[in-house]
Length: 283
Image (cartoon, rainbow, N blue to C red; front, top):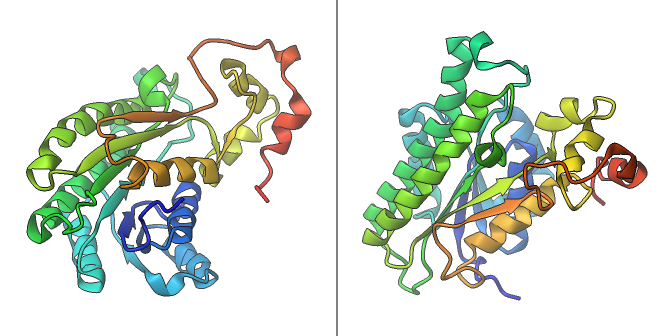
């Protein structure tokens, strides 16, 4: 199936992380050109990109995603290299590992989480829409696409991480507002969100490696497995595609094994060997 992405320019924030890199690979496989954003992981992102056979189609940009001026400069560099951006994936985010209730959270952590996870998405979306206003819609009618990476924490909440859950829940309102605004600039422009649950990434590795952690997590899922980053990336590509999702806007695709926020399995019913095999890197 041709997803009509081979002539598109895709900007991905947080491309130095596990899901971001998987997204870069998935879009590159479809022939897209890429603008890959990083910040603290910029050196690792550059080293990783050097090993990709599609590196000549990619530009790396460094920006503090919580700083509107930095985000603006990243988009300027992208425009300078490729002329326009067709798809923006606002994927960058942080998940503070310390498990703390609200009454023990300090202001620094709360503000940083909100500034990156919510503010960063707002500034990314604003610059993408400003770029769209400058360049106008594509002549071929392939609408622009803005895609957010949310989290099941935004749907179900997450004890000990209310700052993170709040930042992700707010993306619902942002997405549902912008789907009505983007069409003023591009009549076929779309805004959607993917919503991963627990995923095997370096950010989640410490928690997943705790004895019994993975087994407890899958108790809330009909599918007894933890997602891999490539599976999240494939969903992102599908929603970004003007072929596969031309008439899909304002929607949330939850990729979490059917998670419902309730216990589905007793621990003794979890296939531990099969589950732990999923925590290893994909072939």
